View 1: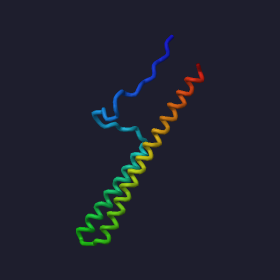
View 2 (view 1 turned 90 degrees about the vertical axis):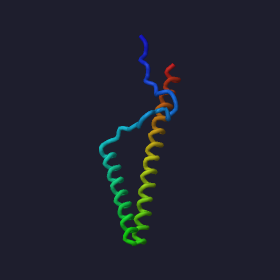
View 3 (view 1 turned 120 degrees about the horizontal axis):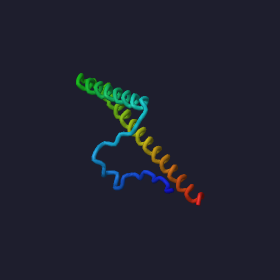
View 4 (view 1 turned 45 degrees about the vertical axis):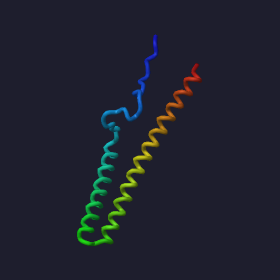
Length: 103
């Protein structure tokens, strides 16, 4: 009896995809990103309105806060990506180690 074959990842470089790759996320994660995006848009709108009314101090403060929120969101997403890759790499290492010990 033959062993079932494991599903292999697609061959080629990661840039070989012709569309968007969406990850499955929980509803809480989507809601958190939606809330983050709404807060970011609110800060940007407030900064633009402040500059339009010649309130430079309020506009600069809101702009700096919006840039901070944007960078924070990018860092959070980067850390999630690094964490997922580390978990996948660790599971591959464990699978390879089991191959050597079972023989």
